[in-house]
Structure formats: structure tokens, C-alpha cells
Length: 429
Image (tube, rainbow, N blue to C red):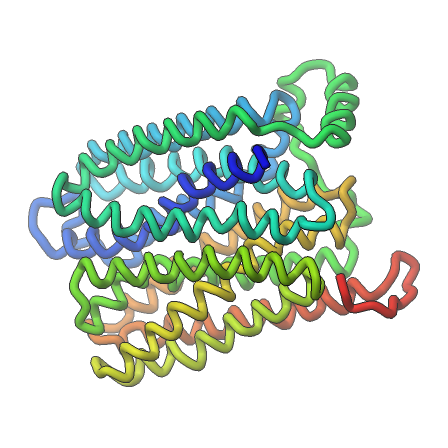
């Protein structure tokens, strides 16, 4: 329970703030149209790069974060991450140019998030067996609950305090919450014993810092690893794009700044509910089965609701379609994030989990660095400020999610094949 509560708190704080990035995206876009601001003349893609860098580095540095948690302690690594995360927000509050924000609120924030986030999602799954899906659903619901809380809170603080003081305030609050939660971060006893054996064979802890947990070659060249990697790439390239642009798109439909921020909150509320409920059901119907179904449904929701909304113009119908998309995407697309680490233990075994988890999260981070900026460029390529400016972006997200669905189906089929090529008879995995 301590692991669940502490991991939830860490993810609520650092990932929740990242999931509320849409508030800053919309704010900075508005400032870009005004003279004398750090963002004057910046395009949506250039501003989006701040949030993209942060979310990408959150997982790109995963192998190093895992290695340092082994060499030192997960408690220390998470605490340092909380300090760096808070420092990034405070430094960003003094930014005078766009590149200041890209370095502070982007690079430094992503490094801090990575140190906290990867400790939580690597340690937590090893503590559970039968209820692993539910546990990870609760923990990773912190992104949704965090976004639900932080989005309206940030909007209110920006209106009353200004965005600079808001960054400073959230820096102080986040440091306090992450510091308290980090004190409970610890390896599961069997994993701790194995790690202690590994550390005793090293000449120094510095050696452990530099040696990242590479995936065993026999695992890396297996079809199931390749399939899971493809799924991770396609899903990550698509996943954050709608999340980052919820507020901006809502404003093209005629919603006010406050109302558009509510779409971020709505999405994150569905995010939290979906992760817990689907995590609970996944323990019964099979985590890989749930992974495939949720990825498929997220793809369908995009092409069936968001894409038509961009074509319908500023109408009641387009607003209804976008609300439906926000709810469904929040429920199903976010479930991939909680089911992903839970499925890795089943696919590759507990002994390979830490290394596979680190490498595949790194791959997801790299994909995010590509997918979301491309989406921003697609908006830039349109001279219209109407919903139609987002049509190409919605098409991109749809294609990527259907590709991810096919990859997850491949993973599901590979899981039926035993280590020696024997085909199992059960789908419940």
C-alpha cells in the first residue's frame, strides 16, 4: 500500500503537471500574438516543443534512471528527481526567451520527471502478481487525477498570479510532494537481493552509474520484443498529440480560455477512471487482451469522432463530436500506459523486466519527440484558425494508433507461442 500511495503521489505530481501542459500551450500561443513577450512570433510547433521535450526525456533517460536506482537507491534517485523537477519550474519562471523555456521547462523538467517516474513504474510492478494490473492502474491514474487537478488549478493561478508566479508556486508544491513520496521508494525483497549481488560484483558505484541495464540479446532479437517495440513507438508518437492540443483545438471551436482548459480536466478524469477500471478488468480477462482492445478503441475514437469534428466546422455537432472524443480517448488511450509495464513482466519474465522496461520506455520517449512536433507542424501548415487546421493532425494520430493496434495484436499472437515454438491454448494472459 505504501508503494501504491507513494508511486501515485509521484506520478500525480510530475506526470500530472505534464498532462496539464495544454494550459501552458494555449497560454503561450496567445502570448505569441502579443508584442514584448518571450513567445512573440513563435509558432504552435515551436511552443509545443517545450512540452514535447519534457515528455520525451521523461522516458528517453529510462535506462539511466533504472541503473542509478540500482547503483544507489530508488529513494535517493527519486528525491533528486523531485529537486530537479521543482528547480526547472522555478528557473522557467525567470525565462525571457523561448529557448529559456525549452531548456528549463523542457529539458530540465524532463530529466527531473524521468528520475521520479521511472523509479515508480519500475519498482511497483515487481511488488504485485495477481493484482498487478489493478495496482498499476491505480498508480498510473495519477496522471489523470493530476491533470484533472492541475489543469483548472493552473488556469486559476495564471489568471490571479500570472504565469511566472504560477511556475514558482507549482515548483514549491511539487518538491514537497515528491520529497515525501520518495521516502517510501524501495525494491521488492527478491529484487533487492539480486541487485545487492550485482552491486557487490562492481568495483565502484560510479561503474553502476555508467553501466545501463541493456536487454539480453536473445530477448532483444525475439519477435515479441520487436512487436512490443513497434507498438510502443506508434502509440507514443500519437498519444501526447491530442493531450497537448486539447485547449488550443477547443478554442477554435469557440470555447473560452477557461472552458478550453476544462477539456484537459475532462480528459484526465476519464484517464484516471479508465486506468483503474480497465486495470481491474485486465487482471481477469488478460492484460494483453485488454492492451489490444483499448488500443483498438482509442484508434476508432480518433477516426470516428475527432476527425469528423475537424471537418464539420464551428457547429454544435463538431463540439459534441469533440466532447465524445475527449471522453473515449481519455479512457482507452491512457489505459495503454498502465497496461504496458504490467504486460512486460508476463512477456519477458521478472528477471528481464527492469532492462526491457528501461529500453522500451526510452524508445517511447524517442517516438514522442518525433510524433508530437510533426503534429504541431501540420497545424502550422494550415493558414486557417478554424477546426479544419487540425484535420491533418487527427489523420496522423489515427494512422499511428491503428499501426499500434496491429503491433499489439502481433504481440498478443506471439504470447501464444511458447519458448520452443509450442502454441498455448489459453488466451487469458
